[in-house]
Length: 308
Ligand SMILES: C[S@@+](CC[C@H](N)C(=O)[O-])C[C@H]1O[C@@H](n2cnc3c(N)ncnc32)[C@H](O)[C@@H]1O
Image 1 (tube, rainbow, N blue to C red):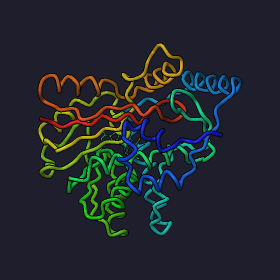
Image 2: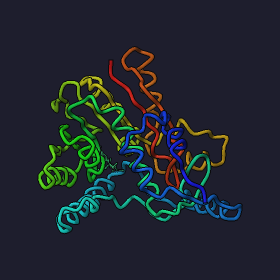
Image 3: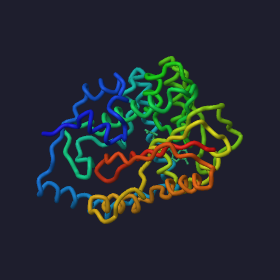
Image 4: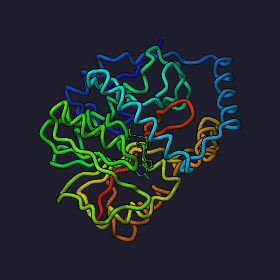
């Protein structure tokens, strides 16, 4: 068995170890980040499973039927939240898969802890949010889903105003219900990132983020980027699968590229923001592939920028 150490987390996030707060270090200590490396036969089996998935998968990102899939999925989380006495556990999305091999540091590994991916993301989000959001009093998450990220933010920063936006109604109702039942300054709002409502004005000097949400726009991100350029939030963070950062000459990366493209997840977000920087319209503050992800792809590359 091996274990992800504080040094490994720092390398994955592009952070310094002394940047980790007590909350972050406590999360690293409390969760089980031990894992097994695969032998050749196990690795071959995983690759075969990934190849079969790539050829058999029929999900089309951004297709019309996906709207009702999201609507129903989040409605189930909303019902569970109400029936389970407003338990935050009920907010964990169904798309988080447990007990699977995952991608870590250039290879597939088998975690001991069924929630390894989710817990790794908790450590990452604590570091990211504390490092970049401390100075902003209002934070918006676009494509907020069940509100897990906002709940973590509320626990880290109980006094910040939080706003969760999504293109279907159940997340809006969920965020409003979470805010009321847990007494957090948190509100929900309906917003379609493909057709942004320019009359929805962001607060002065606010922060904006997306987490696995721009990926769902099937590359139709330009209107939302324009919206951000007009609204000029103080910081924008996107944690999204970024196909441009894989190395297509490596089998391990090539498989993720094939999966990303088969489903039609968003592409060209990073080159577009780099182009805006070259035009003097954006300033990039950070780009990092975490070299961490689920079985099929790495959904957690961060791009941090400011409209100029
Ligand atoms: C993979 S989920 C991520 C949810 C949440 N950010 C999280 O980290 O748990 C993608 C989210 O994007 C939302 N979404 C999809 N298309 C959207 C659009 N055009 N505008 C706004 N939200 C959208 C979905 O409803 C869903 O909540």
